[in-house]
Amino acid sequence: MLKSLRVAASALLITAVLAGSSLAASAPATAAAKQNQKLLTFTATTVDGAAYKSTDILKKPTVIWFWTPWCAICRNESKAVAALSVKYAGKVNFVGVGANGSVDEMKEFVSLNKVSKVTQLNDATGKIWSRFGVVIQPTLVFVDKNGKIETHIGPSTTSYITKKTAALAK
Image (cartoon, rainbow, N blue to C red; front, top):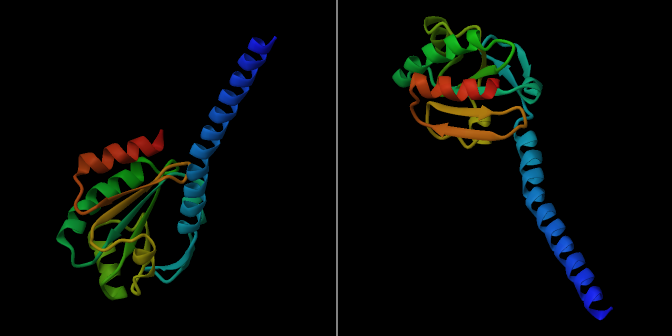
């Protein structure tokens, strides 16, 4: 009887430890998801002057592209961003966040680089850049359907942007 009591107590203890460790493992994930949701909730103004609420980012996977109007690398990346925004329309949101230039310079960049189908935010004050910890352009932020954020700082190849966007669309 004592032996079976020890076995039962051991089994109960192991179950409790395993349950506790699985709860502990999910707690950081839940906290991170809440933190990401807070990070992804903001308002802004588009380059065209319209009000923007980030609620779309929370509804489906999103690529957030941080650029400046004078950045040659950003101009190069714009081709991939424009093409992928059309290819994955309805499946993946694309949001551009322009900074470090005047509204006229941002509008000219959007027009010349044919990225007008992408929602383009005017972040002249740098608030959105700061919110995401962006310190250099270009930077890409990939947000999956669960709100998980992955940031790529610096230049990206077309194949890299394509691969990451295709993964978001799955």
